Length: 239
Image 1 (tube, one colour):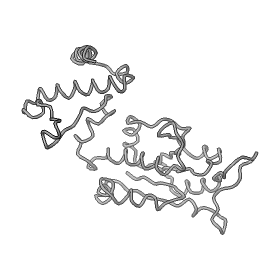
Image 2: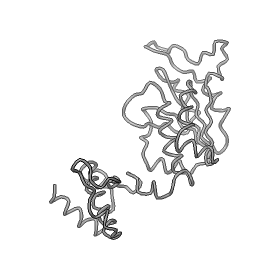
Image 3: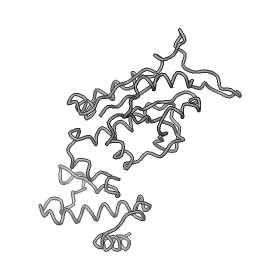
Image 4: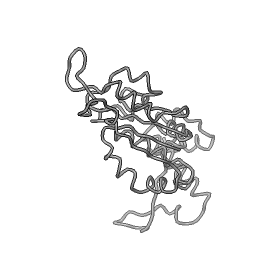
């Protein structure tokens, strides 16, 4: 997989590309992450990429001609071009899994007061990571890239993300490690006794419980098994 990020601030992505799982995935040639400076496609000797908005208003708007040249320089017939904007489709785990199957992703980071609306003619999809506004699309681009890269074969162990929150449709069960007792708080006995059937049952129960309490909307969408329905009835009585 190749991910290309178009940004006005390429240095923001150096730590992203040189730490932890992302670094190993790049070194192991599981993914290629290129960062391209949008300013390189300005025809202005001062490398201006923005201008004042027609109709007036605060701030500056990124020019469509500059963005078009930048996108065309990296796009190919297999590319999926994403524009990071709070107005876009809400990003979630299902979408991360969908994007993880692509061969080539181009992520465009907006900035300032936004971009000339005509850039929508040159991208495939607008993506939002939440209902709030950031100073630019760089952090959002990192979120998308990180969530996609970790799903690539060999980037992590398969089992490390198969039970992630939202991957199964439910929130993830609680995790514990040593020491077994700390400051009066102990690890649940079921996780220590080695009975794998009981551990599976415990984790499913706790996953359902956490989801029911924190994200009941996910429960409503989930196709519960008879076993899970019984657990849910017990959970409702508990709380």
